[in-house]
Image (cartoon, rainbow over all chains, first blue to last red):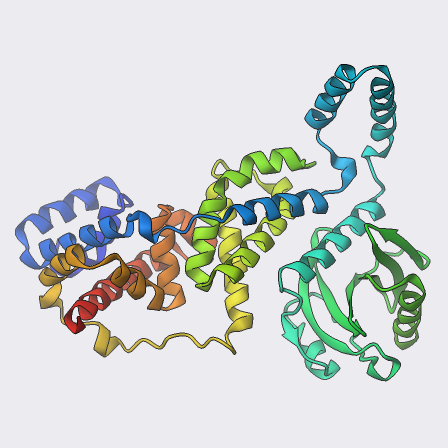
Amino acid sequence: MDCDTARGLIHGHLDGELDLIPDLEVDRHVEQCDRCTAEYATIRALQTRLKDQSLYFEAPAELKEKTRRAIHRALPRTQASPSIRRSSARRAIQFGIPMAVAAILALLIVPAAIRPGHNEIVAQEVLASHVRSMMASHLMDVASTDQHTVKPWFNGKLDFSPPVADFAKDGFPLVGGRLDYIDGRAVAALVYQHGKHVINVFMWPAPEAAHSAKIETQQGYNLEQIVFAGMNCWIVSDLNPTELAKFGELLRARG
Amino acid sequence: MPDETTAVDFERTFLPHMDAAYNLARWLVRNDHDAQDVVQDAYLRALRFAGGFRGDNPRAWILAIVRNAAFSWLKSNRGSDPPVLFDENVHEGGAEETGLEADALRKADASMIRGALEELADEFREVIVMRDIEGLSYKEIANAAEVPIGTVMSRLARARTKLAHSVKNRIAKG
């Protein structure tokens, strides 16, 4: 094995990533080559120093707690784990008959809700996505109030072209867009603002069956689903239902 | 993991790897506040895709998501925080000097190594952290960074060379 080849493979050799034959050949070469011996020693020394505990950042306790809470908030309640239900039943027995009755009732009621409709699941995903976009400062991939900047940005990123309009003169300025992932597919997320409220609009091509507009409230957020211009469209915000419906109207009128 | 992921299953599988997740995020975005955001964002993304997790290495899986969340963050925050430009001619000395580098590395203060690693370009810093600090395999790094294994190997070689030179230069400057 020549020197240049060996030098290229020393890293793989030290990382235990080479097949047996080249691995042995690197070994043999390093033994007889000063340059490669020095290189070998340098990488070894570097690897040793990088294992130093002072270079390792452990997660702050607050982050663990914060993330655990966010996970519980983001998971639909209907997906409570069987083990959680079993232990709550156990506790109920310890706390006497009234609690036990309540627990049994809960066990009877929960399974009925365990298979939510498809729309329910999409609504949960939309909501989780909205909450996530607000929480992790990942609201926008493209920040622009110009619809002619936002719309082309989606080109090549999606297999459809979402209708993008600005409603600044109606009090709902467009502030940007981003890619998101809902219902097993990449979707367009448009971000609008109304006063201090942020509105996320998720869009993807609609299947045949169109749903009529309806607004629901979940965990303090309002969600509206509309179908227009061949797009399945979910609007989510902490805005009140009346204002949200007004925004939905604007969107539909433009489509 | 079954398709109907439960909070308990998810926590049991992925929360034990939060130190690794934070360590990677912290090295990539280089400050605590944003690293925390990135980790939390990554865990919530992971939660949505956890039904598709079939692998046997949850740590590598979550680190891949953290890596991508961190790079999205870097991409959208580039404007305010320009990358440190690396002048290869200054930082990479001749090959004949390599013997001295092993000595320099052994003698260097931890703060010099930390500073040198922090200044490496993103693509080099990430392979060093994933391989030499987190111990991921080339294949796991290739999956996370979405590049071929050969690219991981050559990037790692360049990254280590740059890092060693940079530590040596720091010592020379005092």
